[in-house]
Amino acid sequence: MCKRKQILFLPYRATGPAMTWSMHSIGWIEIGDVEQAEENFNRGYQTYVREPFKVWTEAIFGTGAINFITGMGGFLQNILMGYMGIRIGLEELLIMNPVLLPGTTGLSVKG
Image 1 (spheres, rainbow, N blue to C red):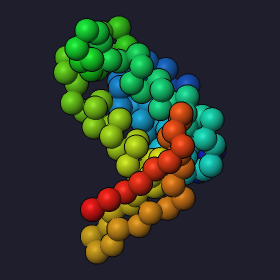
Image 2: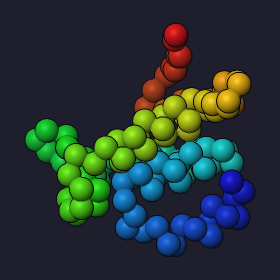
Image 3: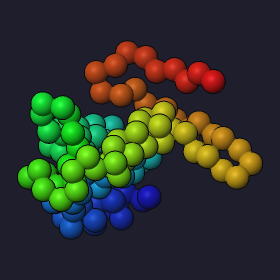
């Protein structure tokens, strides 16, 4: 995604569902803006996970779907396709420009 397109869509996603921020984070990683990627990564789970059992909700106010699997999936995609740079094609698997997750010192893929 080009940076111009990424910036144009930001004002329209202020209260999007949980997976919105993961997709934005992946886009920021693709264009090399790791600060914006981290902000969106954190926003994608910190405001949607509810105590005491760490249950994901669809909306930031704890409304919408409860145990929101789509939001959890976005979180995992952010790690795999965003920070790890994995791209899966029909006949190939690529790893493109991996970036360390916020607060980590290493990253490894096994298997």
